[in-house]
Amino acid sequence: QVQLEEAGGGLVQPGGSLRLSCAASGRLFQVYTMGWFRQVPGKQRELVARIWPGGSTAYADSVKGRFTISRDSAMVWLQMTSLKVEDTAVYYCNVITYGPSEYWGQGTQVTVSS
Image 1: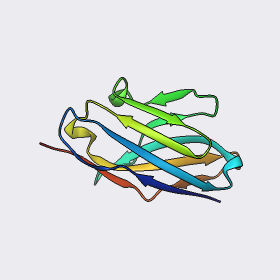
Image 2: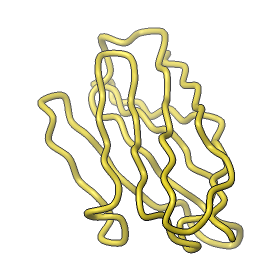
Image 3: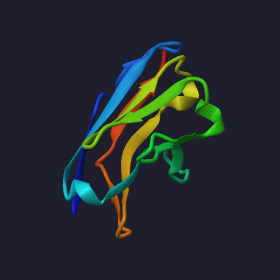
Image 4: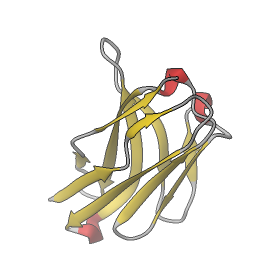
């Protein structure tokens, strides 16, 4: 089992920045990929960014060049810059283990509005 706890959401103006963090606990030796998804009402949850153990990353086209994902053994961060209104969503931390199993955080609201 892996438990995830996100922090760092909030209200920011367009063009601003936010940094999300996610603390993982439990069977950390089983963690494979770590990532961030987001969801708006009425739409499917979508991948924002993912990072592998060696540091390789993947990003949604809509956030490339603006968002940066990073990790260590127990944390994953999402640095978000040049935020747009369309980035407004609930952001979820995601972990996939070698099991494989998949775990989710409880979500943190990010609102981009003037």
